[in-house]
Length: 157
Image (cartoon, rainbow, N blue to C red; front, side):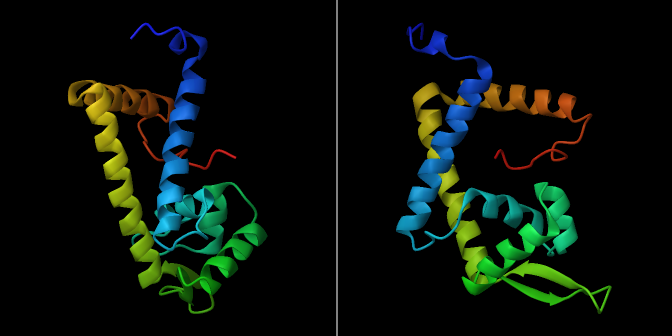
């Protein structure tokens, strides 16, 4: 594995390039399935909406963007049929954003595509090495986030 190209990249570049390769393939395949209007930022939003919905304020905090930007994203996703705004169950004046059937369909497609990509990567480097890589990265993420795996899972702009 001592290919000269591999030594040219630092860890940050390799992680970024592998993430970009996965996301690019994911979105190409989603587009082929009729979900061409979905963008990576939408996926980060959807992950926070699942399973019980989220408010615009919660989404803005999670994504690190303004409430106005979230509102525009939700407007787009609502017009595209992925989400709907519902009355908040605990605050009748507030709204909660939830996935529609189409939103759940794109999430199911995403999971299947990611599993296929990961299997191809396992076929390339081996199951043991993939498991070690996942364990090592999980350990590092937990350490950086003081034991909370998801505290900083925001989009990389």
